[in-house]
View 1 (cartoon, helix red, strand yellow):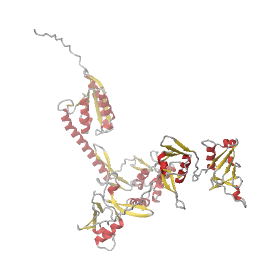
View 2 (cartoon, helix red, strand yellow; view 1 turned 180 degrees about the vertical axis):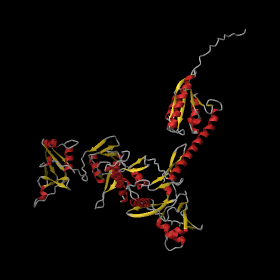
View 3 (cartoon, helix red, strand yellow; view 1 turned 30 degrees about the vertical axis):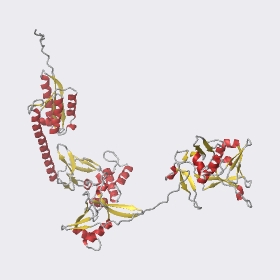
View 4 (tube, one colour; view 1 turned 90 degrees about the horizontal axis):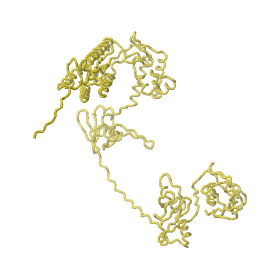
Length: 634
C-alpha cells in the first residue's frame, strides 16, 4: 500500500532589511577636501535612507589621514568594531583608494569582513567583495592604488628636495630651546633667557665636562627642556650636536625609506644632504662652534681609538675580527688581542689569544726587521689570520703570504706527589655536633710546641664559621670518657665495643650514646676564651675573691672595649699571686650555669650568690646564701 504524506503550503516570509553604512576618507585636512568629505557624507546618508530595503547604520569618515596605515584611522577601526558586533551588513565606499592604499591591509580587511558575512561595495570600480571575481579584481586594483600612493610620495619628496636646493628653509621643529620659529619671517628667532642656558651648556662641554654631568648641573640650576622636563644625557647630546645654534641648518638628516610602512631612518649617505649656513641669528659664535667640533673629535677618538693591528687580524676559526683587550693583574697592565666572538654571550670560539708584544715580535720576524716598525707594517701588510692551531698567516698588499708556525708546547713531566696516608683515629665518625648535626673533624692547633690534636665541627672548616659549638682536644675526650665509664685508663677496644656515637652540646656537655641503648651524659660548661663579648657587670664588684692571696678582684678594660676581672694582689708590692684572669662574659655564663639559668640575671645573682672564690687551678667556687657551695672547673 503506498505511503501518503501531507505537504503544508509555505507562507511567504517578510524580507529582512540590511544594515548599511558608508566610509569616506581624505588624506589632507584642507578646506576643499573637507568640503568633499561633507558632500560624501550627505550623499551616502541620503542614498541609504531612500532605499526601503536598507537600514541606516551611519557614515564613518577620516579626515587628513593617509590610507596606507589602518592603525591611525580611528573611524575606520570603529567601523570594523561595529561590524564585529553585528551592527553592519553592507559597507559603501567611493573607491578602493579611499578604503585603503595598502594592498595587504585591504585584502586582510576584506577577507575578515567576508568571514563575518559583510559585503563591501566599491562604486567607482563597481566591485562587490562577496562576488566570485571580487577578490581577484580587488588585488589588482589595490596594487595600482598602492603604487599610486608610492608615486605621490616620490613626487612630494622630489618637490621637498627642490625646495632644499633653492634655499627655502621651512623647519619641522618649530619649538627649540633657545629659539622660536617666526612664521612670517620664516626663520628662527632667539629667546634671550634660554640662549644663556645654551651658551652655558656649550662652555661646559668645551671645558671637558661629561654630558651626564652637564645634565645634572642644568637640572640643579633649575633649567628645563622646551617640554618642561629635566635634562638627560641624550637630551644634552642632541642639543650640543645641533648645528642650528651656529646659525646653520642641515636638511635631510633622515628620510622615509618606505611610504607604505612609513619607517623613518637616518641618512647615512644614501641621499644627498643640504647644508644652509647663516639662515638665522646664531647663539654660538663660529669660534666657539669650532671648539665644540674639535672637542667632539677628541672624545670620539678616546671612545674608539685605533691601533696598528685594528681591523687587520681575522679569526681562522669563526671568521670574526680580533679586538684589543686591556687588563690589570696585580697592578701590572696586560694588552692582548682576542677574537671578538668571545665577547658575545652564548658564543664560544676556540681561537688562541695573543699578547700585543708577541704579535709585534712575530710580525718583525716575518718581515725581516730587527724590531717592529708600525709605519712599514701599515704600508706593506694587508692583514693576517690566526689559524685554529695557533699559526699566523701574514698577507701582504702585493698578494704574497707568509706563515708563522706555533712552536710545540714542551711536555712537562707530571709530578706525582705521594701524600702519606692519614692515620686512622678511633673517634673518626663518632663525634657529632648537637647544634647543627654535622660530624666533628680532626685538626692540628698552630702552637709553638708543635701543635696538638683537637676535634671541631666541620661547619667551621669554611671561610666563615657558621656553627657556635665548642672544640675538644683529643686528650680531653679520652679523660672525660674514662670519668663517665669509671675506667682507670682509656682502652680502644672497650670504647669500640660500648660507644655508638657522641654528641657535643652547646654548653660543652657530651652525651655518650651506648650500643645497648642507654645514654650517659658528662655535664659541664666549657668556656671559649677566644670568643670576646663586650659585657661589664656591676654585680661582680666585691663578690670575687682570690684563693691564692685573699684579695678581691677588680675589673679592667682591654683594647678599649673588652672587660676582664683581675686579682688586685697582682698590683701590690711583695705579693705573689697566681690568680687567673677571667673575662666578664665568661663569669656571667658560669654564674648562669651554676644558678640553672639560660641567661645571666643580675638581680637573681645578688639574691642567691654570696661570693665567688677563684681557685688556683682556674676553677670557680660559688658560695650561696643558703650555705651550699658548688664548684666549676676550667
